[in-house]
Amino acid sequence: MISGDRRCLVAGNWKMNGLLDEAMAYIEALGENPAPEKVEIAIMPPFTLLHPMGERLERKGIRLGAQSVFYEEKGAFTGSISPLMLRDAGCHYVILGHSERRDILHEANEVILKKLKASWKAGLEPILCIGEHLDEREAGKTNEVLREQLSILEGTDPAAPLTVAYEPVWAIGTGVTPTLEQVEETHAFVHEELKRYGRTCRVLYGGSVKPSNAEDLMSCAGVNGALVGGASLDPRSFMGIVEAAARAVS
Ligand code: PEP
Image (cartoon, rainbow, N blue to C red; front, side, top):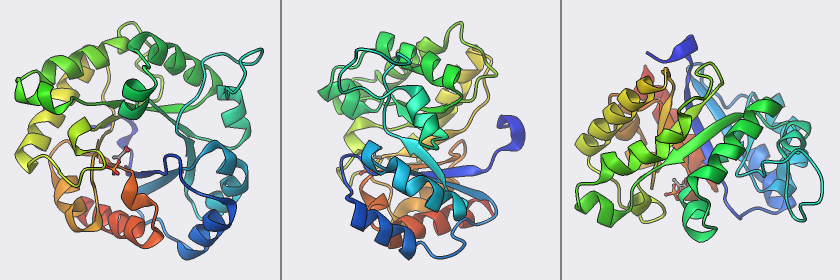
C-alpha cells in the first residue's frame, strides 16, 4: 500500500526545546540499538542541535530532521535556514506546514508549496502536516480542510519523496485524541486524496501520542507511524512509543 514498502515512522518533534547538554544525555539514554526492525526513528531538534546530534544519531540508526526551512538556497534572508544548510547538517527530513507555523507564523499554502519544492530540490524528504481546528471538525468541515491543504500537491512530481502527518490541531499538546474510528476514517480519506495526486505514501498520526495510547493509534488502518511532540522530549516515553509502534506493526 505504501510505495517502496517503507517501514512505519516514529518522529519526534522537539519544537523549541533542548540545550546541548540535554541533547547529549538524551542520545545516551536511547541505548545502543534503539530502532526495532520494522520501525524507523527520526528526531527533529531545534536548528542549533542539528550538527551536534546528527552523527551521533546516525550511529544509532536514527534519522535527523528539521522543524522548518526557508525556500531560498542562500542570500539576504536574515534569520533563515536554507534546505541546503539542512542537508549539510545531515538532515533527511523536514517538517512543513505544522499547525504552529500555520497559525502563529501565518504560513499559508503558497509558502508551504515553495518550501516543499525547495526541500525536494535539495534532496530532503518533507513531512507535510495537515489538520483541522476543532470548530472545523464540529462544523463537519474536516475533509474540506484537509483537501485544501493537500491541494498544494497538484502538479508536483508523485515520485518526489513525501510523508504526510495528519494532526488534528485540537489534539496537539492537549492530551485529547480523536476516537480510533475518527482516526481510521480520516486516514482513509487522506490516503484517497493522495491518490488524486498519484501518491501512495505514509500518513502518520500526530496529536497527544504517548506510550499508553500509541499502540492503539498506530494499529488503526491507514496509520503508518506517529509524529510526536511533547512525549518525544523524554527518551523513555519516546522509546515507549517506538516499542508500541513495533507491536502495532507485528
Ligand atoms: C506536534 O507538535 O506535532 C505534536 C503532535 O505535539 P504533541 O504530541 O505534543 O501533541
